[in-house]
Image 1 (tube, rainbow, N blue to C red):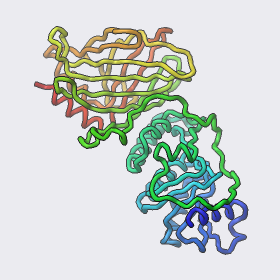
Image 2 (image 1 turned 120 degrees about the vertical axis):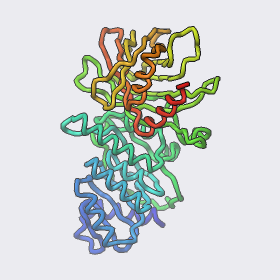
Image 3 (image 1 turned 60 degrees about the vertical axis):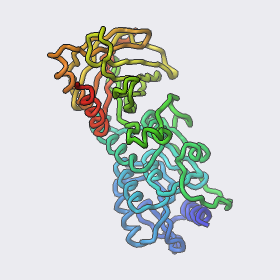
Length: 402
């Protein structure tokens, strides 16, 4: 059976050196047993040359169908390239009992046509040693583009982006089955083979999610899926006056209609402020209240959670638009009013001189919310829309023009 064969390959490779076994062929961190030419195992860190090693193996063994994973991760770019290769080849991925696949290795597991974990799968945020925000942003964009092809559960992507690089969100085999990480044909698991735990999560800070927050799940939103209006995932950033660099989170964009049949856009963002989580929900709608001199209104609600102190939002002095994440935004013409604790209404001017300018700014790729906290700190919450979000928002803005 496949499970027994793959576990045996993993066991032999972990206990013995590959050169000592005549039937084992090593390609960098990959190993193939010529008695099982349909199985290849990644047993070690992912180095920058791993994609080349993998291609060497596939040329030597063209019938490879299943990739076993036993790795702490490594180079993010190499991991994404390997994931794309696995996906393009329609290969299956598998994590054996007592094995682990962490960090960049998780991208490869998620690329499997059929995928099964009987060990541990660990995910967290992307980072780099130089802490270069631009390169991290590019890597996150590459990751989201790649994972969008793999039918990864939305909740898993969210937890990946929410978990800081120094921690690890560990999925057990049971959890993986529950959330849809394991999928496809069943694999026989009757064989009892003990695997040494050569892989362990690097600097794992805990086995649970960093925090719990409701996240839209595209897979469960059948009505929106049928209309082609599924939630769009993008990146959120929070920069506060006492932090040297932004915290990174997620934002989900959806569109729906109000009771009058007008299109509205909803953004649901989650980002951390140290040990405190900030959930923000923005609802953009065309103003139909004739007593309010506004063309568009944005209902903004915040919820603070997590283990850290609560520094509530006391004011929303402005909203800005821009075309790149870290540019200086241009203010939307409007005014905000506090409706209750951590809740605001931002009204975009209904003056004819401002409607055109605001409409153009609404089509920019990033929005900033300028915030003032109760402690006196200033903060900037930046929401990315992404290409799909840009198109969706443009359609909605055009529908608001009489």
